[in-house]
Length: 354
Image 1: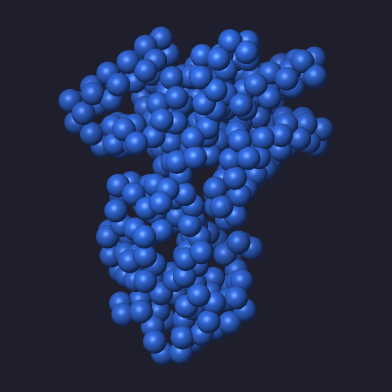
Image 2 (image 1 turned 30 degrees about the vertical axis):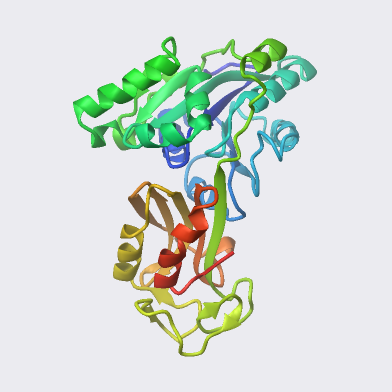
């Protein structure tokens, strides 16, 4: 890897909650100390969650494209961002993390254009798809995008395979081989991740002929199958105190079970037991991902929930996206169903959805 003059670009794709961010961050300690990596991340909603985690890593920089998918509605912003990263940081590698419903073909075509425009100074190295072995069989049935992500990839990283038995894992691998029998399938080694030498230096041949490959895809570049809901409690946007109910103060009419501590305002800490109970009642059939900030008695934490499993990571100092809030979360799930499904969770925490 050292001595390269080009800037290689690795694109990570995979369905919501597959573990893309965790795998990317696990690669960094395995790289040479002077190897400079910049992460360009596309995020649903307007809450910069994973970039807060990434700031605690050895990344040279993190750039985030919010409020849409850069493979469709935000197409073009990625090209501008990549050129800015090249000029400002001149990294040894750029990693692009797509949103969970993104199909990377459009991004790959843009990078191929940049290869020509920059005389190969920017170069597509590989498209890596992360698959959640524990939940793939479920979301594969409802998500055409998940199938296409696995079908058009240089490498498939099988994550969370340790949570399933051998028979279930064999079924997942059979499904993946049916979709894409020629692409290597690499098992992620838990929190230790994957050896970067297996993912970097691939020099992909995918999407070199945009006309032929677009025709093969039948023109389906993106599926609008994910709906995003914002859930919050606090004065960060409303400017009022007290329990919030659609932007208005509700006085003492708090939702039963929503235990809070402090001065009675919307920024008061959430009891960890109440949060656990609320998360445990969320349906993973229609709600696929919850991520954002929660204020517990021990301080502000980053919440990452996917398909029934979750992590709470201490945030250290309170970052700007969490200021003024006890809760600020982005919820992602099945279009037309997620808002109804999240109502009980929202009520349990005394939060508002928008």
